[in-house]
Image (cartoon, rainbow, N blue to C red; front, side):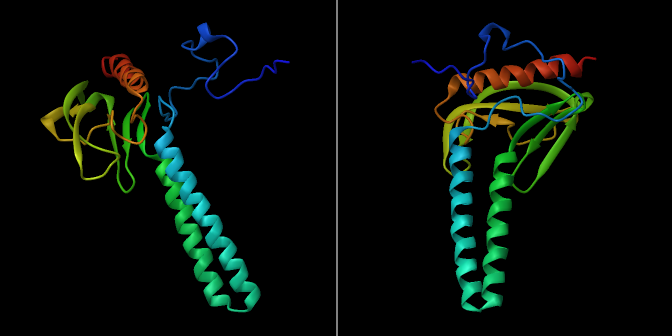
Length: 183
């Protein structure tokens, strides 16, 4: 017996995927792609670690050592915040510009300060580690030629092993650039 239901990857009408929804607001910041499996797995692992630390804190609190329990809760909160920040990392776009959210630093460039957004072949970091591999990167060129780290790479936690998703995301950001940089 088939059980029809929606999943995150499938809609009722596949031909309507590219049509903007009526509540689609271009003034809000949005990521034009879904977080990749590596990023979600790393965040889930951190949340699992945080749950173990919280359980340890609860055991320590029942044992009567409240300063130790407070330290465990504080550590768990830091780990949870790191997992949530890891899920926010990526390229975000709106009518106001393009935003590159890193783990520690966020850079926002208004569309009127963007010279070009293009995909290039260059050495890129593999999953954010210092090791570099040859790959594709979506780069942003600002007025004045200021260097900006790549917005997306095909070897980061969102697109490793998903070249079609990288191409779609790069095309979407380039389309936002074409629409709002020239207006």
